[in-house]
Image (cartoon, rainbow, N blue to C red; front, side, top):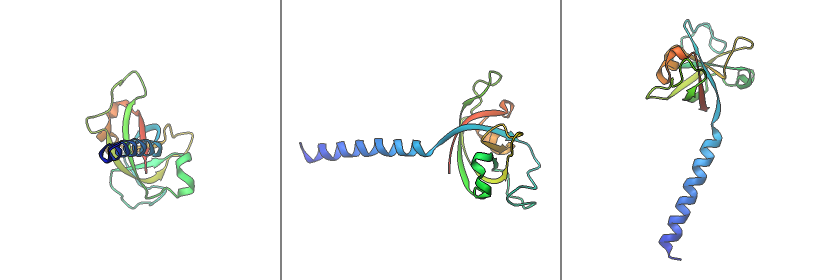
Length: 134
């Protein structure tokens, strides 16, 4: 086998393995919409952290260890028949975790600020399927 074929094969295998590894780092869940005001928050009290923020559900909260971490959130589809295709042409946004979304009120994994949610989906959807990663 020629050196070029070996390198080409190795490159293809590496690309496949890398893409599988990155997919494994993503979580799937539900994103919901949170309307202002966004303060006080469980992480920062009355300190304003902007509008590209989110609250984490109990599973992600980890006793507050998730405060200040950034998550890349991608809209992957609708959760109801009312808005079957809610994702926008910009389906990914980066948000900082600033708050806790406790049960039973929390209906998703990440409760996105209205501005962050509307960047990736139609706000009328209220909730969307998402993939997210730190």
